[in-house]
Image (cartoon, rainbow, N blue to C red; front, side, top):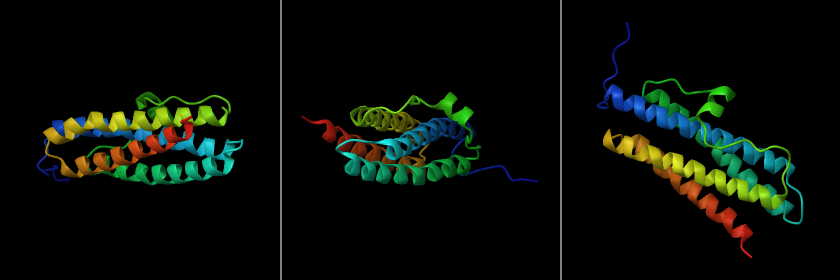
Length: 158
């Protein structure tokens, strides 16, 4: 028989945090997919710069997916893992076709900022539950996504 979880975070708090992290996981996964797609399909005079930047960003984002999913599991909940679940949970929308490089950059800025907002929305839940591991994860994600958005914005500066 399985022992009930008792880590000092109530079941109610764990459920709310896991739900928030599930939204973060979905947004992160869709941002990963969009960034990887743009890495493959970018063209134009900034090809090399964007190809390499997008690769760095999608690689970092790919690695974060596992950390977020494992935190959900550590809280005693199942991590979403299907495209259907991600589409239902995510704030990030898919991109149709292959946009021009400038539009790719703009869409990735929006995606990075969306993931940052989603992470920020979970902070009060984790803080109220005194959940330092989740707070640490969220702080790291915020730092990375805000920095990525800044770097992408700098490419559009005239």
